[in-house]
Structure formats: C-alpha cells, structure tokens
Image 1 (cartoon, rainbow, N blue to C red):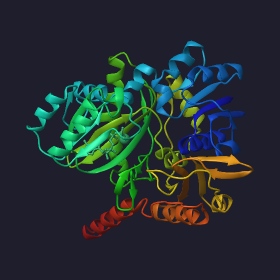
Image 2 (image 1 turned 120 degrees about the vertical axis):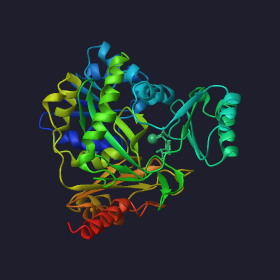
Image 3 (image 1 turned 90 degrees about the vertical axis):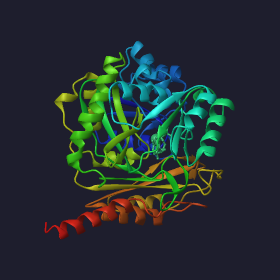
Length: 436
Ligand SMILES: Nc1ncnc2c1ncn2[C@@H]1O[C@H](COP(=O)(O)OP(=O)(O)O)[C@@H](O)[C@H]1O
Ligand SMILES: [Mg+2]
C-alpha cells in the first residue's frame, strides 16, 4: 500500500514512524513533512491548506490511503474533496470537523445530548455578555468560537478581566471571524487528561489516555503553549474509568453526531477535566493530538494501518486496541523564547546519540535540513520520546536522551510526567495504609 500523511509536526513524525512498522506498507509520502520525517518517507512540498493540490498528488501517485494530521485541512473539507474523487482518506468530513472548528456548535451539541461539560452561555453581543457577568462568579472561562491556534481561551480571574476579553473578542475582533460568537463557561477544577479514540461513526475504540503539559514553565507556570510534553499511562484516571468515559462521553458524542447528520469518522479527541463530579468535556479535537500522539502511538501494539482501515471501512467492531504495558514519555524541546519570539536556523547536534539509547525515539517537529545539517525551524523543535517498564523508567530515559541533544537556546521542561509519579506515590501510600 502507498500511504500519504499530511502535516509537518511531531504528531506526523510519530504517525509516519508507526506506519513504517506496518507490514502492508510499501511507500509513504508526507506533505510537507520535516527533516525527521524525511528519513522515513518521501516529503513533498505542498502546504496542508492546499487541499486541491494534495488531492491531485494523491491521484497522480495512486495513493491507497491518506492520513490527515492537523485540523486545518479537515475543516477546509479535505475529506469531502478526496471522497468526491474516489480517494480513500482517514478523518472527519467538513460537516463533522465542526466539532472542533466551532466551540459554539460543540457546546450546543453537548447540552442537547446531555454530555457532561461545563455550564455555559453563548453570546454574540458584547452588551449581553457583560450583563451576564453580573449573574456569575469568578474565575470564568471565555472562549472564542472558532479556530484561534490555541489562543482563543481566556481564563478571567475577575470581572474586569472578563470584560476585557469580551471587548477584545466581540468588539475589537481580536480573532476576526473566529470571534463572532463567544462561549462564557463555568471554570472547572481538576486535572486535565486527553482521551483519543478511533470512531467509524458507530463504534469507538479508545486509545490509552495521556496528559499534556500546556504551560511553558515547570510547575504549570507561565503562558500556554502548543504542549510541552506528555506521558501515558496517566494515574488521574485508571483503566477501569475508560468504560465510563466511553459510555458517558465518547459514544454519546458519536451517536449525537450521527443524529445530526454529521457521521463522525476519524480520531475523536476529548479534552477532559477530571472533576470531583467525574470527567467533563473541555473541548473536542477532530484529529490526533500533538504532542499526545507521540506518547500514545508507541503504546499501541496494533498495526496502525489496520486500525485506520477498519475505521474508514466502518468495521471497528472487529478489532480491539492492544495496549503495551510500557509507559511512554515525550519531552518537547523548544526554541529559546517560545511561545514568544525565537530564532530559527540553529544547528541541532546529538540527535543520533539520543536515538541510540534503548527505547528512545526523537520525533521532529520544527526542523529542516540545510546544507546537510539539521536546523531548527519552529517553536517546538523536537519531541524527545522514550518508553520504559514504568513511568519512572520512561521519564529517566527521555531526559537522558534530552541531555544528549543541543542547539543554541534549547529549552525543555524538567518535570514532564512528575504529576503522574507523585500521585502514584500517594496512591501507593494509601494502599499501604489500607493494608493492600
Ligand atoms: N471550563 C474550563 N475550566 C477550566 N479550565 C478550562 C476550561 N476550559 C478550558 N480551560 C483551560 O483552557 C485550555 C484551552 O481550552 P480548550 O477548550 O482546550 O481550547 P483550545 O485548545 O482550543 O485553546 C484547556 O486546556 C484548559 O487548561
Ligand atoms: Mg485544547
């Protein structure tokens, strides 16, 4: 089979890395790819939003299956376009991708079908939104409706901050058309977890849960980023919680989408807050998460192409996901200054030494080849990933791999996975107390 992967981040490198392991694959293309992906696939220079050119390429090269990484081409309707030309592609249609593209749509869907989520109200007039602030308590969460590259959510500690967010989004049009409407929602307390599942429109198959680290600094301090690292398994939820999440959240979402005439095929990603009252949906994404995929795929024993084909063919009920008992940790190495301004084009050294460590894999995100060297080309540069017999071992290996790599200004968090360790220790302690 010839496979075509679309995207250029750590997520896509992990997808390509996993697809390489499929016995059925003879050739992999990736558009546009990066320097790491180029060692496993033939990279073609087509941007992810040029969906017509991507379809032309797939047709000309007789691609058997296309796998879409990022949300942008999905929301532009790449799946519909490929389908109209008889090309097989993995991902939701444009009508289904609205689950991520519009937070107003997803909140209304959750409300209508009683899927657990934060209480919320929707506004398009700033005067109404401001008036509503008089009725609620703080902090409160204000979200622009559309895609804002991870910048459209403001946690307002007090009324003044909330009023500013309302003015910025609805009146000053800070996010353009993506901010024509806003959601004002209850602030949920708890710990976040990412649950990704395959959905063929009827059946879901849940991948091992993982936990991202959104903030730039250790201890979850500083501004939000695209994600600074991830680990799996998590201990904030146990394996035994998965059937509940499937029954109360994932399946009802897929069934709701079907009832709305927006059959959901692809990866359904539920960003959950584990509250004292159980898991609640913060948001949906309509694709593999990044960096989550970099820690989740190494823990899946199945052939990824098999899982994708069953998803596309509507036969997911015929397969089970086999999860490896090993833990996986991905530490994101970023350019100094990220998520603010940063330099590009800095040579990266030590990649081979890191990858030689047993269990370690370095996924590339913002990298490119220049004059025979690999240089930085983005904010998040690498996803330094390792598996180990348990979380402690995986963390140690991932950081050992990080220590081999350098480029000018390299920055990574030193506490990826620590929350999982801490809680495990507490759980173990309470087990001891309970005489288990
Ligand atoms: N209701 C909420 N209560 C508390 N924190 C929230 C809430 N909604 C969002 N957040 C925080 O804001 C982050 C971004 O929100 P999210 O809905 O995932 O939007 P996006 O990923 O599109 O920016 C979440 O990862 C979470 O940390
Ligand atoms: Mg999010």
